[in-house]
Image (cartoon, one colour):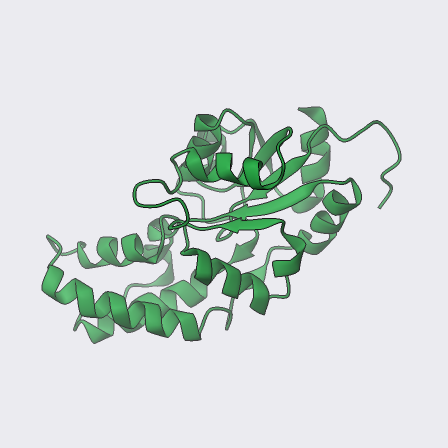
Length: 226
């Protein structure tokens, strides 16, 4: 891609993972329903699971088990262990990159950007998924929902501030698909680009993002306009 022109306005671009770089909904659905079957519960269709994705697999299972009432801890603990075991072994069976992802990452790298992932997945799961998809080496750092400690996953600002620190400082922007992502970016006082093709927990134009894109081809132009 042509990178001739004025200096690109950002040094660091951070990305959410699930629903932003990759569509992981089917693998998460299979893993969750495996855990629900283990707990003696009925499966939930994919569309019913989508709203649970974004706060990590623990919260996803908690929400699924609370559909019929209060969370039963004695049922939750073994089901959660089973979920983690199954998902770790089946991270990328159906998970795919969204169209234009590789070309967009190449373009940002050619412009000298540091590229990072900030996800609410456990860091080891995020790294493993990126490695299986052949993407891990493209990112300066990967920060998970557990990286900063309890209570400091998105939408708290700490993961994004740590991303900026690990990337050496500079002007940063974040790209995500949910209120969690936009909230974290706003708390860290950086702009957020929302994708409208992800697992959006509400319509993209209601997320409060700085800008919205419908394809990764639109990301660099959107960032350039900020």
